[in-house]
Length: 379
Picture 1 (cartoon, one colour):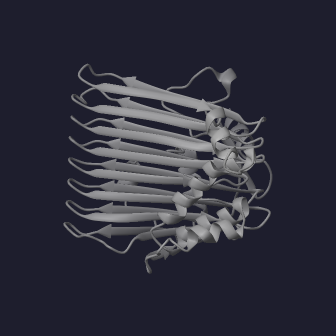
Picture 2 (cartoon, one colour; picture 1 turned 30 degrees about the horizontal axis):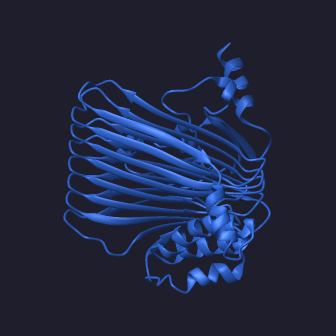
Picture 3 (cartoon, rainbow, N blue to C red; picture 1 turned 120 degrees about the vertical axis):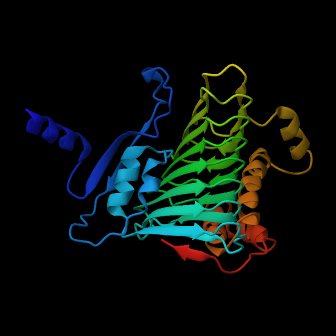
């Protein structure tokens, strides 16, 4: 009977030779009605046999970190990555050179990265995903441990071609007085799925997560943000904003979990969605979970189109309606290009801007970027 169940389970996850279906990933801590179809996403990804390969595994401590896209994606990345990569920033060190994870959907690259930022240290971590071909899948699994009084900045610039997909799963554990800043730029492509889970385990730990996104045509964008506030007097600020055009489909699940014992903690989450296309499908599910009395939690979402007054103002100055709407899209790409910390993330943003806005506009932003050189890159 057990063998039969195992066979059925295997059949439910394997679509055909060379691919695996990851069912119901990026599931939030608290789900809504199934009929809304906003609780998760199912993805079909490549499966490469690495039987016999000698594989470097991350220290066991990283296996305890919750990641935004869930355990199924974590297991798949670990099975598909050619190797794992571990980086440690020594106690009290200020690392100027960014730690870079760069993956390409054209080459089907999968990266498994663990970063330990020791007590009082600071570091910048960059994830860049890009692609230009018609098909391909890339993925990045990033797990970060931020010890007491450390400061970690994570910048993710993600954009692949139509017909491609990228999976981005992030997990962070923050100790006492640690500060974590996450800036995400989800710039579209065939399917872009990203999940972030930040555990504010220590007292007075703080997380600031900002996500800016754009999707058009028939792009699928799936976002799952989870911040668990466990320590006392923790702070969480989560902000998402973006533009959806044509027939793009976007789902956002944003959860702030004020866990029992998190006295004095405060969490805020807000999203602003600009709808530019008549066939856009937008699903937003903001949630506050609370199991403590002395806490504060707020969330909200604003969904709409460009106001008639703004359109009239811009059209009076010689712009067409479409050109006026595209100014808001340009602002997203300009922000990504101007704030790319190093070459790989800058290149990913420019490539996607060229596809969406045209080469002239993309390189107009590019000229003012002022890129720092270097960065320890790996895929």
